[in-house]
Length: 341
Length: 299
Image 1: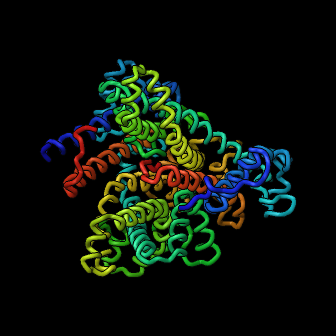
Image 2: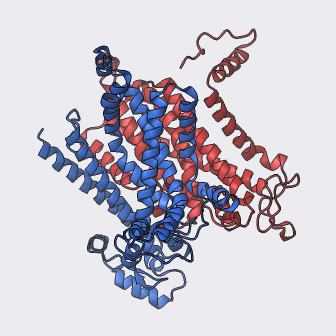
Image 3: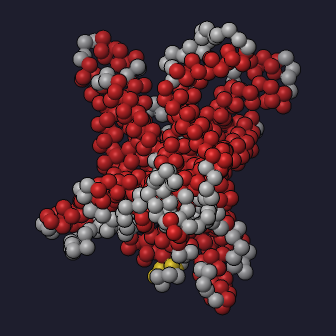
């Protein structure tokens, strides 16, 4: 089977997944609830507003037409209004995206670096206490509710020991945001040469990033550790060692690269953890990102924002998974992925 | 990992004593598994017998004794309106474990049936079922549960439904591949050759072989269900306000964490941590013991 056909198959499969996901979202959020118009305009709206909203949403039309309009709205970026702020949903989400992306980036970096380091250490060196400690920590990391971990971290590191600042968002109350270039405060402050601001931004992002990175770290370290152990039992490593290569170069040049490759497939799951995690973590730290917006919207019964977020996450998630599968079949020639599994 | 199950010399006594002895001597070689079973057992005990050993009400408001730190009268303190956190913790254990069991049982049956049917049916049934599972998998699990609860109205029931829905593909995919694997084994061919009909092969030969797979996946889903339920409660989409669910209790404690009253939110979070970690350790160890090749999907 040619590579082009395989990639085309992956893309078609991804599209079908997105289509299915949009149908599920449509069913649960537009069809099943008693009155979707009321859901959109909120419980405080007048009867007039509901009727108007019903008309605007085309609820008198047949389901197929409604679905088509729904899809068209999502694709063209017409995501509706957030009634509590009076802004469009797109404006609300776009305005808060950089904060979430910056947090996600740091969380991922922390998780990735620590996972690689600890997985390598715990498998390369035969220290049962280290291996046991890493395994226990990874189980605890996956079992800890991230929002609760954030609260405990705030309690200890901010309240009791005063190492990190409290939950006041991206910067301290007295710090002025740096001039906008990348929208990432830590980068922008460095670009502008404002070292004090950069330090403040780093201190503020530390606890939320560690909290958000906990689950991805636990997941990655388990995966890498298992891969390393599996690869080191493979025959080719025995051959390499019996040809006289030392343990360390064999590990570095042969075991590590082969153990890394399968973790690529986990990129989608990591994204899912970061997406869902941001919803749970940002609120705790008053981080002004999309996740916090979602929780606030739920509390204010402003569901247009939540509905958009749900479908956008699904689309993003599927896209990442498709890209990963294509990359994987390109990078690793052994994979004979069937077209449209 | 060595296990002494087969060779354990049981003490004199009836078969029940011997079985118990075997279980204990097995757990003695599996400290992590033993700790996990113990932790879940403790939570289960509190969930079932909590109201008997600790009779304070979980919902009675007593403003006079609000925000009391843990003491002999209130082992986990009291919350902002004077409710006993320990009673609420026990009630929360009951809710979490019950929802976990419900999600696992219903999900395993529905997802298991979908997987077995997909694996044993002609192409178009298989393809349709698996496309549906792909569509569910397109959502990160928590976000699917959010979609369901937002659409159908926030509450324990809809939360359980959303969590269950998100777990279906994991059973279905796993069991489908198991069925496909088993179907190609010689003993199925032998049954065929002996004249057994398809339904008989399914019921007598394939289904019994996938039960252990289903159980292990169920244990993993159990932890995921409790964690997701707490997350939904935390963002206000799960159990609603007076219900002492662990996630909502953490939300209750949110604003008191930084004013020093940590116990309101800390204990329920610890309950979640204990239950979820215990479930995943049990799932992981049984998987390693029963299935050294590791065919299972991690939720």
